[in-house]
Length: 253
Image (cartoon, rainbow, N blue to C red; front, side, top):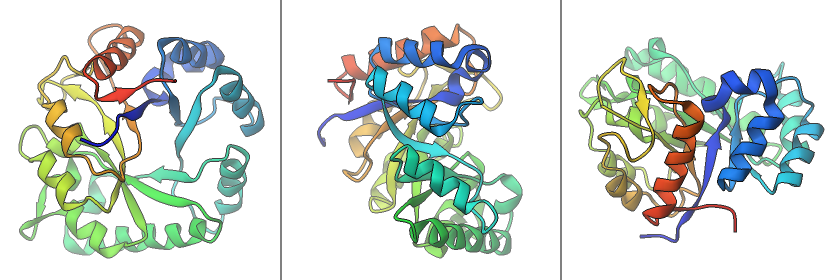
């Protein structure tokens, strides 16, 4: 297995608390031991303000979830990324774009164009999947068609959604796309649609096998829980502790 990857938190996980006190959330994430964070909005902060808080807390910004870059918003997105020294932006699409080969082709064209826009500024664009990219379209996963059609886009593979409720062999996906996957979203659960997630390690994902199969290009393990039947902050803590205790990921040095 590759050297232990640093563990980050997708801040969407704590969005309800962040809307009330974003700084307190960042302090808690640092106190737990996370090495970094991934943003899903800055909750009214300027990029400079946010960057200073991260620096003061010893947290790194591994990547940022943003709207799909276009000619209208690319300057704003690039300015934010440059201010935060962030080289990876991530976006995604809904299920409608993965219904047919034609809709996948159109989605890939939009992402490829967006990747070229930010690529001109030295920034990479990634795609974050859900489960619908792992439905079959003309005999293959939509995910496979998509990445063949947009070669300048990297994959931020959400391993729980990629499992598609126990229908997909995620280690096999990781091996097939070893040059494409550059970030991993780590979430766990009961593998039942519409059921809440669990702390990482408390669900039914074979997370050890998944992370072992991850290519060396996958630089970060990013914990993300969309919902949880238990206290979300405690689940964030338990997820980090489980990954570090099992020597799958590393916190701040």
